[in-house]
Image (cartoon, rainbow, N blue to C red):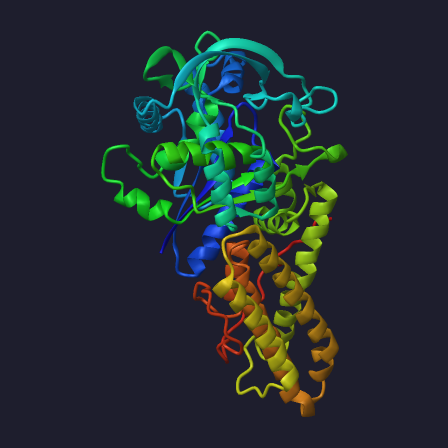
Length: 509
């Protein structure tokens, strides 16, 4: 089977923040999770380089447009490369290839008579680059995401009708209960669909916005930023309105879009109706996550200036502990807060549950057995139960879990729980005491083997979150094979040579 995983493409009008990092890390974790299960995955992320906000930023920069777009796009690409994101394609909407597919899609719906031109007056939020209804605003008349009042704009534009597809979309959501995950966001979309849908404005006059894809049927307009940006999901894998879409269909059949809840309407209302007009089925899944809240409990936003710098926190705790923390800490039901103190707490849990345990047991056997994994051990019922419990839990998640926030959350929680359980087992059996009594040598070796084998299982399960640290743990145990989704207890090769090495999680101070 082939799967296609996408992140949103990110506006380049400012620097990337921890929210961008999280969504992109989540996609990478899901790709590695699926790859361990034997699934072939194509993963895309990238940048949205059109629209009014990017245009304003370019004008303020004083740079040539091409240089500005590359510089700002590279800010995101460089961050993702530093985070070891294994993307297969990096989207840039300024490329000719993407523009050609946008033009193709526009011509397709225009020739089907699905586009109409009319005058329109509405409240326009420049931060969202969307028209807003009064009901979308807070009690002060501000956009709740940008804390700023929209401007009243009257202009002539091209529109794409949505209302005639509203009942179809309601029926689709009700007959595909796992389309939007977690399910509570499906209920939110159904709430949006209780009232008639306004026509979607799909253009902007060049007199106001010139940075975009020119409408093929009217050179005085460019394409609305969201109509342009959403097309990246099909332009990245080669869709054509009249051509061989065999390769496209093979990936699109099992496609998953990752997104934050602030862009739920564009992805769960506009996008499926756009796809229907193009003769394409909706993506298989939408995975929606909440906000990371910054200082004051307000959603992080470049325009509000309360963002967390991903480079700063990577320098603080390292890339992979940050990857693990973000995936473990995102709430399934609410927004999640992030701070340096919370990051430090998460780091210490990893250090205590996994890093310190690995270092203690390896140092112990370096002295007692020359670092050799005990052989011909006789495990007690307690030992077997611990290993079987850990192996069966991970095996179940990898065998039956799906690409979702719930699976990522459960897996990360079970990794921490397994580390805690093994630490408790190690402390209760006191191998440092057993080592002093030759008559208890057999029990000592059984405890050591059990602890090492449990670390092997934990390391393999942690691979999607922390591939380098996972590999270091396995190498320290004398295991060279890349981890797979086959979790078998008591499978650590006996007599292998272990290596103590440097601490996995150095002290932060």
